[in-house]
Amino acid sequence: MNHRNVNVVVFAILSDALMILLASLIASFLRVSIDLGPQVPNVEAFPPYGEIVLTVIWLWGIATRGIYNPSYTPTLAEETSGVVIGTSLGLMVAAGLLYFTYRDVSRYLIGYFYVASLLLLVGSRFAMHFIFRLRNPQTTLNRVLIISEKDNPTEQRLHTLIEGDEVLNAKVVATLFTPQATDVIAFIISYQVNEVILVSSKEARLDLEGIINALDPLPVRVYVVPNEFNLALYRAQVNTLEDIPLISLRDPAFTSQQLLNKRIFDLLISVPLCLVLSPFMLIIGAWVRFTSSGGALYKQERVGENGKLFTFYKFRTMYENSPHLSPETLKTMDDPRITRIGKFLRRTSLDELPQLFNVLQGNMSLVGPRPEMPHRVALYEAWQRKRFAVPQGITGWWQVTGRSEKPMHLNTEDDLYYIQHYSFWLDLKILFKTVWVVLKGKGAY
Image (cartoon, rainbow, N blue to C red):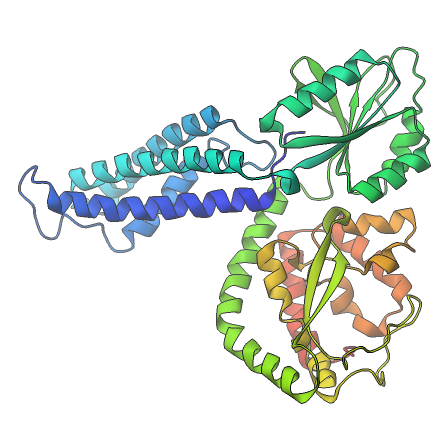
């Protein structure tokens, strides 16, 4: 149950890359400043793009030690050990690569680089651990619900272990004693629980099968502390918390590695797009602002991954204080609430551009089910909530296969198709098809 937020892993990778590049600058400065022997002008510098190549090699070396694995949170000692071994491995690979490709590089320069990178990488980790201890980490914690029978000593010890272990990155929201399945579902939705642990005693008064089946549509991880019951029908993986075995009955829709890869891809695309399109978005914002009363941006609360609420951004396309439609009402092409500029922005999908900042914040992904409004989610059946098991997106399978012309009741089926068939190549396919659909302007209003 030891999982890290994907954004924390991405931050660690970017921070390490920055430290490694800084180490290359320090190494170059030290080689010139410290007189340890004769210097040859064309030998004392890194080869062309050498700093970038070494950064990639160093990151690869650290990654081989599992430091960037989102599936667990390493201790400070494990991180330090992983950095030392990973950078040493990177040094050996870099030395071999230079031997066969570019021998005329100062050994002092590489030595300085190795020592500087090691000190910076270890030092930055000590600093981050210290900073995270000072800040309130409640928003990034895994929210755990324990379900048990009353006076179960295993439940009491499990609660103590989770609360007392900082590495787990988890908080016990509550313990429910022998609840009904419907009560469990309502509690998970209300308190945004993302991990559930079922603890049963020998008397087996807990309706494990009923609760597990009820949890199936929800985007939560489910663990069972095993007892004398049959787990053969479930896809089980065994974890441990000290001497307590935790059997994972269902993995999340995307693996931790898929989520990390998806987040890195989102940043590689959205950061350059934000830089390039910022002047254009400023022009659109001014155009919206000065042609009708109200602000340029429209902000709305939406339901995101795992049911978490977040602020959703769009360019305003309606007149200020326009009445809201009922949840059952579909969008129409002749909606009188939409401004003349708003019609153009919707037809070209330019009103969606501010959602790139949602992607940067980590609230959304480039591709995924569209984030829904809370009042619509309140009408969802249990099976429809599976669409929140993955990051919500700017575009998705539904948008490129029908957009607003497709009936609303078919949206969730398309979203579940995307979740079940997810791959990196499917994301690329959807992005390319989105460009074509937007250029055609079909179904957008």
